[in-house]
Length: 425
Ligand SMILES: Cc1cc2nc3c(=O)[nH]c(=O)nc-3n(C[C@H](O)[C@H](O)[C@H](O)COP(=O)(O)OP(=O)(O)OC[C@H]3O[C@@H](n4cnc5c(N)ncnc54)[C@H](O)[C@@H]3O)c2cc1C
Image (cartoon, rainbow, N blue to C red; front, side, top):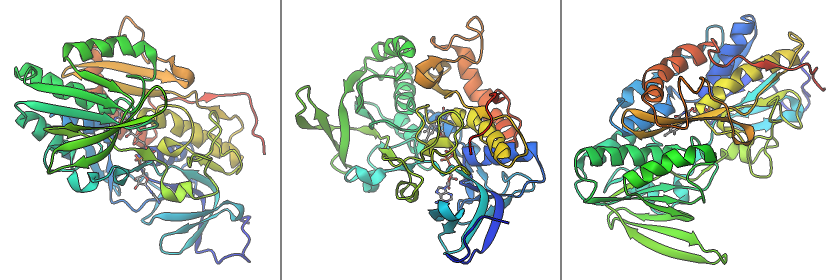
């Protein structure tokens, strides 16, 4: 018997476990559930026909990967035995253990896992949507534009190259500067860096949120003679005029507006929770899914769980985080279904491979509170230094780890930590 109130609505279908979103987190958690219990009745709701390996887009923008190598059909990734519902969720009714799809159908669940990623808010920057893809305005945050980044980087001979970073939180906080360093490396190797001036226009106040990695990054800022600006928030783009407008907050709290001419502009858009999450009972005050940082269970609804970019946990929003979160959520959903007894706990692991030059990476790996959490001993790979090994990891090891490990429920480098806690109901 499902605990739904039939008086409220007619229910069009029900599943033991419903998963909202079939991205990195959704496919991984479905695979982890099925690898624990292949008889579960699990459905993934996602309207997208394609699934992207977004961590690859930095290397597309750097001319290393083809865009095509970062995409697969959603159908090919849905784990065996899992139902795919090709629709979007528009509303949640957690008190009725039900949700509403875009086409009006109502689905009920015993356990709900919510992982629809975040919203890239391109329209929050005046003129940006029209400007993208022309006049040197680009972004590695879009599949179709990452190849344009590489084309523009190769074509640029001289002038001003601007790289923007919006206020936090964003997914892969290092990605704005990855684009910056890989572009500068190309220009340096081709003897153009004197004629091209690169500027990093960062809305935040630090180069990277975990201080241990900043010295290595600063070496590259100096090496490429990058004009480093903090507190500069991109608010408008004039593509044909090739001008970008920034708002700068001064020490006394007043604002200054300034315009910069550009020949190349790499934009990272502001990011927020998707509208249907922000306006739902699942959201916290800032709009993100409100979960317990350890169990990833919703703070108010005991049969709802969240993971991936859409939650309000303070980890780095990365696929690496989703890789560690998925087994935790799978375990805890099975505890809720009384199939397992011990809860698992997520430690806030996230990772950001900072591509400081072609062939070398500073590999940031850390848990909640910015505590370093290297996957390898320092003698093998010191993440605080630029290394060829970390590049090899990013280029050769992480894509198969994603496609063949994480999305298949193998949980390589992601075994969950079990606690002695029994669940609170
Ligand atoms: C340029 C770039 C570089 C990055 N580099 C790295 C890196 O080096 N390392 C790393 O670990 N991570 C990196 N990331 C971040 C990583 O890609 C994300 O953190 C990860 O994809 C988050 O997974 P997710 O499942 O939460 O969201 P997504 O993978 O974005 O998937 C969300 C899914 O939800 C679906 N959805 C949305 N709305 C609805 C709805 N209403 N109903 C149903 N389904 C819905 C979408 O169609 C989509 O399939 C990078 C990202 C970018 C853009």
